[in-house]
Length: 368
Ligand SMILES: Cc1ncc(COP(=O)(O)O)c(C=O)c1O
Image (tube, rainbow, N blue to C red):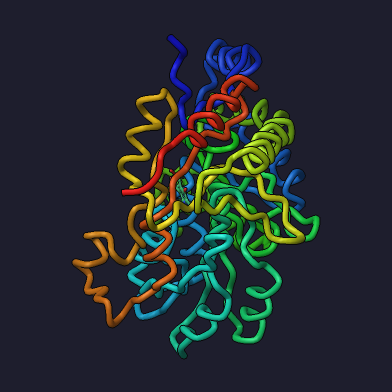
C-alpha cells in the first residue's frame, strides 16, 4: 500500500535536532543570546532594521496592532478571507474589524473594496499575504498614504515571498508565524519586523511584561517571549527557507502544468510577485461536489483541506458580535469559501507523490 501523502509536513533534519539539543545541553533555555541572533538574521533576511521574536504569530499581530496605537472606537480594515487570528488581533484592542472583499484570482484583499470601506474612524489596514502570495502592495500602500493609515502585514503564510523584488514584512509592520505548518517553523513562534525603532521598542516591552528595566514595569505587557530552543531551530530553518520555498514553487508549477480537473481554477501568481505557495489552493467548478472530491482524495491517500470554509465575519464568534449580512457582505469571499480546496505542495513531496496527486485528481469523475 502506498503511504498517505499528508497535506502538510515540516522539513526537520538532524541540523534542527542538533541545534535544539545544543541549547538544551547548555541549560540556558529561556529567551537569550540565540533569540537575539535569530532576530538579527531574520531582520537581515526581510531587509528591515528590527525584528522582535515572539511566542506566536498571534502574539506578533497583537503587539503590532497595539504598537500602532489602535484603541476602542477605531476601525481597522482587514480581509474577509483569512485565518481568524488576523481579525481577532483587532478585537483584542477593543477596535472594530471592517471586512473588505477579496480578488477571486489571488484570494487577497481587494484594494477597491478596501478604499470604499474607509471612514473617519479608520486608523489602519491589516492585510494578509494569503497562502504565500503577496497582496497588491502598491495599491494598498497608496491608499494608506492618501488616508494616513498605518499598514500591518500579516505574513504568517508568506515567509520569503516578494513583491517587486522586496520581501513581505518590509512594507509595513510585518507579522510572521512559525507554527508547525508554516513555510519555516519553530513549533510555535512569531516575529514582528519593522523599520520603525519605536514599534520595535514597544514590541519588546509588551512581550516581557512591560519591563523597561529589571523589575521595573512601565506598561501592561504579557509573556510573549520565544525560547532559545525555538530560536535555535528557527535559525536553521531560516537558512533553508529559500531552498524549501524553491521546492514549493517547483511543486506548484508541476501541478499547474499537469492538473486538468474539469472546471477547476488553478492558483494564479500575480505579476511582479514571488508566490511561495504556503498552500496550493484550487477553486472547484460549481458542478463539483467538494465533499465527495475531498473524500475521494482522502480515500486515495491524499491529504487535503478547506482553507477556509467561512469568511471571518460568518464565524459564530463574529455573528455573535453582530456582523450581520447588512454590516458585512463580501460576495467574492463567500463564493470562494464554498469552492476552495488545498492540495499538498510542501517541500517533502517526491516526484512520485506529485505524479500520484495529478493522476488521482485528473481521474475524478465529475459532478454532484
Ligand atoms: C494568516 C494567519 N495569521 C495569523 C496566524 C496566527 O499564527 P499563530 O498560529 O502562530 O499564532 C496564522 C496561523 O496560524 C495565519 O495563518
